Image (cartoon, rainbow, N blue to C red; front, side, top):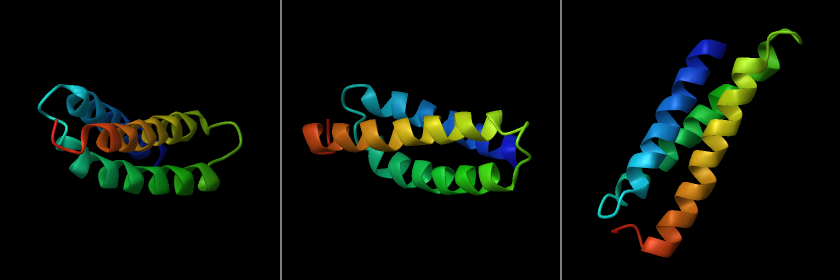
Length: 82
């Protein structure tokens, strides 16, 4: 589950980078819920993992959190269109 959550986090951050491109800000409307689900899955994977093997889940939490927070700020500043 940790590798799955890391893959989800990488996809979320890639979607964030697409949403930063001018005229593609509408992608954030799709990426923020996607990253939020990834954040929830990553937290579950982190809680279920052994103490020595939680690195992938921690990275996934960080990536999904960045995608949600900065993507939401981009939506607020760009009104979700640009």
